[in-house]
Image 1 (cartoon, rainbow, N blue to C red):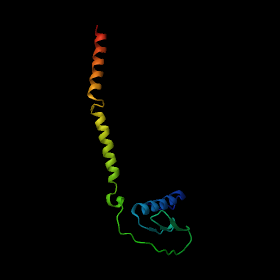
Image 2: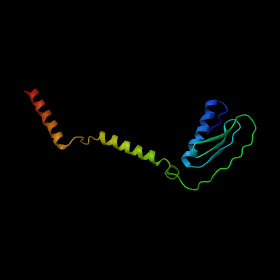
Image 3: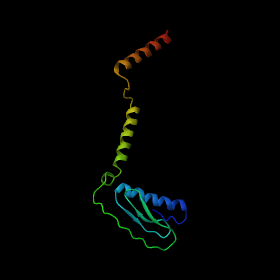
Length: 121
């Protein structure tokens, strides 16, 4: 992450990112910054933030979670697996693997041959 000192919109995005990480990992995220939202972000998506620019002290009790979520354990493998399936489908379409049953394919081939023979006469 970068310092969001230069843009207000980026400050809120960083806070949203903390909420996302807290939900993904089912763990509390504690964030301290001098120029961005400081606070506690719960695994349920709740925010307990302190206003920006004023010196304050925040105290909050957080619960520890020792388990692993699916995302914590497997990470981005779901995305990589989806990409692999998509690439396989594209490759399958490009290789010309028949999409119709054999009877339909033979019918279309016969029709094409008859059509070519009519022009040959």
